[in-house]
Structure formats: structure tokens, C-alpha cells
Image (cartoon, helix red, strand yellow):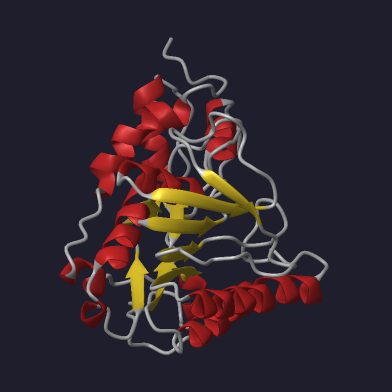
Length: 295
């Protein structure tokens, strides 16, 4: 398969590229700058692409995964910073131009990395299913929902509504929990929190299923992807066991959390790794962090 991936050098996009390389695809990474040598485990092609500019040439591509997002570093919700108009112009308008380019080029399957943020207006503690209409309450969620609506008119278009994505980062990057782990290992104060998570490899496995599924199995083309409900206390208890850290754990959070039901993906055979995958990932997540060595 010839596969184009936007945002492939990001924390989430890298998992998509690595899965595609393992599957034997010829991958073209669409980013502003080429990936650094050795960033991926195999060779990729590169085409310059900026969401604020014209769409790239997609002729000859069998599929496109759009995982790119222009945002303030480290933020998705609130990623507009002090430039909401620029955020809209790049992410909404740029995404629509990309979808139009895919349609003109005859790309057979387009997967859009959407977000659970499209459900933002539902009360905390609500079970979220794909049948529920979007109720975004942030600019980020609204951009994702508008892009989904445009994708619905594109043959072979699929929206993958992802929860928080964790996993080891690429060379020269820090993973999403690196600051949290550093703070805990240094004895800092931890704010209680819990939320839903999915490993990047499980997200990439979901994308592979949707890339290869017959069109008639895609239904309405919207799929939730989420795995575990994770409290910081439980996560840091695993860190403490792995490192011998004796610092006190934060209290458990009692905040209600809306969990996404993933019955559509599971019906296609998707099976995420749950807590065993998180535990197996910890050595890589702890590698290189100060205080992570066992005494």
C-alpha cells in the first residue's frame, strides 16, 4: 500500500508510521520538515506540507491518514493559544483542502484522527457512543467535529475519535507523562486526576483495521478508540514499583469521567492491550528520567 501520513513525526503520528512500515507499506510523511535521520525504524519518503498552505500532491496514494494538527506546543484543547483565527484557518480550512485534494487524486481510504473532544458538552460520567451527536465545547473539539462532517461526504472517509494517547516517544522527544514522572520521582506535589488512555500501538492497530476493512464494514465511518480508565495514583503506583521510589502517592481522584464505548472497533476485531500493555511499556517510559533507577 502507498500510504501518506500527516503529522508523522508527532508523538501520535510516529506510531502510525511505525505500524505502516511494519506492515510493508511505502510511507510518505507529510510534514513541514523531513524527519531526522534514524527517527523511524525504516526508510520513508517525505513531502513538504503545512496545514496553512496548499495541499500536497496525493496522486498514486492508496490511502491517507491525517494526524497533523497545528497547535501551541504541548496543548490540544487550548491549542489555539492567543490566535483562534489562525488555529481555525490552519486546522479546519487546511483539513478541508486536504480532503478535497484526496478526492481529486482518487485516494481510496482517508482516515482522520479525530478526538473525544467532539463529545465535550456531555456531562462528566456519560458513556459515550458513536451514535451520539457531537457536542464540542472547545475550539479544538469544534474543529474536529467540522472536519468529521466534511469527511462524511468523502467516499472511504473514516473518523477515528481517539482518547489520550500514551507510549514511548521518538528520538529526541519526551512522552506525555515525562514531566509527571519527573515530578513524582523528585517528591513533588501531584494533582489528582484520572482519564481515559490508549497506547499508541493500539491506536495504530485500529487505524490498520480501518485501512484494510471492506467499505461495507465501515458503516457510518465513525469509530471511538479508547482502552483504560487510569487514575494518576494507580499509574504512579506502577512507577513506584518499577523504580523503588518511596515518595507518597497522590490521593485517588473522585472526578466522574466519561468513558468511550468502542463496540464498533471491537466488532472488527480490535483488541487493545489494557493494563498489561501499560506495565510492559513502563521501562521504556522511564528510560532516561532522573531518579528512575532502582536504588
